[in-house]
Length: 228
Length: 122
Image 1 (tube, helix red, strand yellow):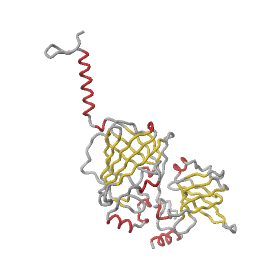
Image 2 (image 1 turned 60 degrees about the vertical axis):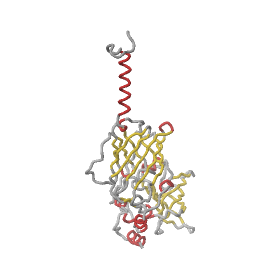
Image 3 (image 1 turned 90 degrees about the vertical axis):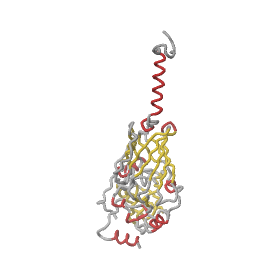
Image 4 (image 1 turned 90 degrees about the horizontal axis):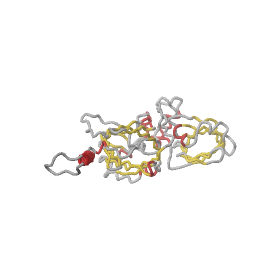
């Protein structure tokens, strides 16, 4: 069998053809959209391990409008009292666990708190032009090396906390998730950009530990269950 | 004034507003903690909040019925609390945030179980 190939001297040998095919394959992977190349598998139930102190950590200065609304807030006006879904990022980062179901083109976050559901699209789709704003927003994700980057926009105005801190519909949230400690720990840097609320973006770090029991419990909320 | 309005709502025979899933700052003073100890009379293991009903005796031995509010079942199970772990007659002590209006209601932070073990809940 001949080895190698010279220009103009016939078809390449099998070995050369194999090397060329491999090179083409590597090239195709290199230019493929990042979103379809999953670097990690985040599937599992994740128990929140962040301390309560992280909830208000690093909070930037509020705008005058946000501070005025915060000062005037009446907790009785909180929609959560009526079992309205708190949405993210108000909920979902501390205390209550969530389950991640991952495919090649999507992640689904299933939160125990209020049974909230988030879909993170990884297939490179564009944000729909006519999408109405909502409490969960619309999430597009992609992989950057071993980190999952999620960008969420199209939030409806809502509270960011039970104290009355509010975002006014101009919020965007970027989350960067990474697996640590052999896949037992999930860590995320979460940055909220809401110019009508904060004078600067707000970044906090949250952590979760995998739950080997893999159980998400139902946590219903019935506004008819009047106790007080 | 807002919390006086809250008190008026809740002290009436018929509540006009539902607080099934209340906002934390609406009911509890999270800047303070108190400790109460007594005998369990009932353990409501349910969502959105579980409640431990506790008879707490004063210095003269007169009991007052307290409600200790805590997590829904899923979170309590993960912390080792199930309906069988707190039964009527069990003696416990609890540390928590008091209610703003002074009623015998506590948001549970830590609990000393009947066997003396202390557990961090919040």
